[in-house]
Amino acid sequence: MSGRVAGKVALITGAARGQGRAYAVRLAEEGADVVVVDVCAEVGDVAYAPATPEDLEETVRLVEKTGRRVVSGIVDVRDLDALRGIVDDAVRQLGRLDVVVANAAICSAAPWNEMTPQIFEDTIGTNVTGVWNTVMAGAPHLVEAGGGSIVLISSAAGIKVQPFAIPYTTSKFAVRGMAKAFAAELAQHHIRVNSVHPTGVNTPMVNDGALGGQISRALEGNTRLGAMMINMMPVDIVQPEDVADTVLFLASDESRYITAHELAPDAGVTEY
Image (spheres, rainbow, N blue to C red):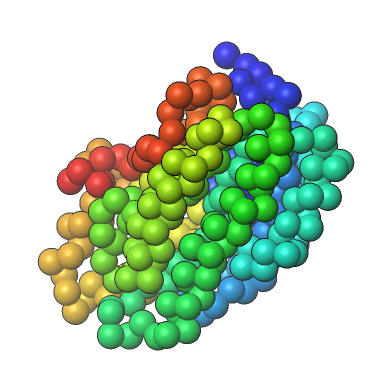
């Protein structure tokens, strides 16, 4: 099957690398033009290196390689006015907007008593307010288009607790609830809203070892919780492209009657 989102235009946040890049490329391969944005800078006190403008340029190059159009922008999703300006300008260039993928997020790991107010504020600001801002910037264009699909990227931590990441877990449960709440109100406009809940994904957030190091140190003080992070299937981690297939399904008309649901490409971790 090809052309599963042909003629559509999709907005993806956090698109400079990792999951966001995989979503952009997969949707473009199936016929969509895309709007890709990323902050391309440090956000909060996270252990891993941030995405760079060069990373975003590489995403643009990979999308252009598919033959689809792409508009890019550097923006902090916590800034609604700036995000809305980029989205509105991109819609003027590309003619419409049909799909919104709110992917931008950060994560810090530490025992509960080592989390700081600033970590909590930065995490909620990016992972919750940033997702809300993304929907607020994109949804009016979907209403104007007569319908569409909004995909909020949560986590297995939004279904099953992720130990040593209270701000992150809090944010991802909030995203799950936000998807359902938006779904209820936007259904009258033929807009579907769903959340996606992957297990650990092989992205720079994970594979540079810094975040894993934080988790390993936290586990030293509470080893019983390590089993909570084991996948049911015999895989330790999945690839961004695996999650991108779920996002593509939700963006396509194949899922035209699916809304207010959680889809979990999680290797069974939330049931184990």
